[in-house]
Image (cartoon, rainbow, N blue to C red; front, side):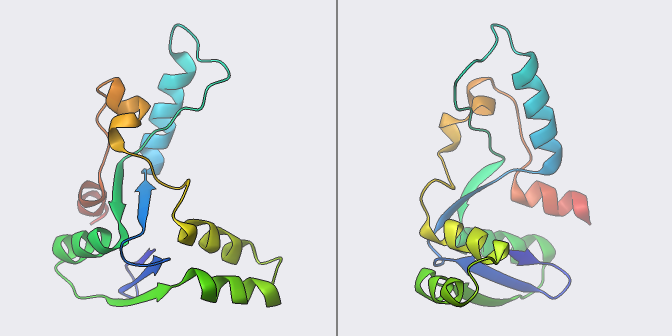
Length: 132
């Protein structure tokens, strides 16, 4: 998780936890392409991605592209689960705990619909450069 305004980076689970990220523009573009694809895709899970990376690589990319140093912290799964015990309805804690587990929230780029159809997507560095 990145907060550019406060220059903070938070890893969910640990710095080596993998995560797949996709820009909102790519989600819209790829969703439309998948919806319009022929033959029609039915009852099939479709994976898309801009980039799959670790939180460590994400932090390195953010600092390299922005040329700024960020403060860093880890939200460990045990700590998040402890917080959920006292605040079980907190949707953000649930989200963070799911991503901290590290399974089901990332997939290899080669397994994505966009990679199989040779559709380029914006990676983290590209998104950061465009956001400047």
